[in-house]
Image (cartoon, rainbow, N blue to C red; front, side, top):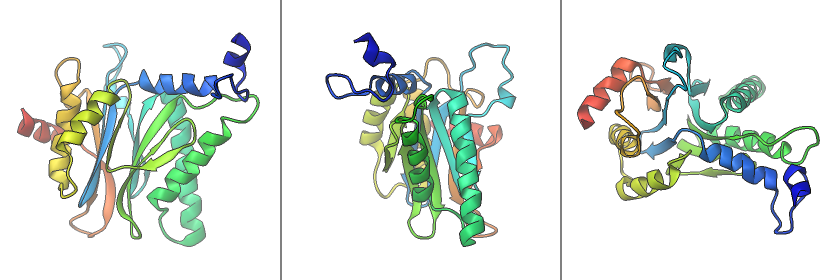
Length: 239
């Protein structure tokens, strides 16, 4: 069986690719992240726990902006996430230049899924040890939430969770989610879900939140990372 463990493109006797199972374990070992799609926006949130108290958390992000209206969060290996984010930003810019419009959330997820799948069947590489939750808005589909896994599979979700506490988080979301949820309510539910399985006290320093929401001035949807002050206001409402 040891030969199967190191052969990326070799199926084992049960029909599985062992290295893909290992990459999914890397995701399951990562900090919990989750996303919720509301009627008028999307929220994504993640735990932000440094491995040392000496780490400057102000210079460390786990929520990334891909385009003006699309952002993502990850669970798993951070270096792999940064590579995929760079690829996503490049694809968004190429699409913008080619079609003179912003890339759709589903197209962005599809392209990242294709990149991830290529790394499951090529020699000299390994699968990505990271899953992404992609939040965005486009004119065709409105507010959307997608998940991209190391296998290359991608799905559209109403609400989803990834990382070490994903099972409990999904159960919590199933009880709290409804289709008529407004963005403000979705943010509160997301914070409560993270708080439910958080080891210690939740503060505006150890979590990070991104939202897709309508800009009041322009009337267009955009992706923003909440500032510590904004995040503290939301935390005060659930405490």
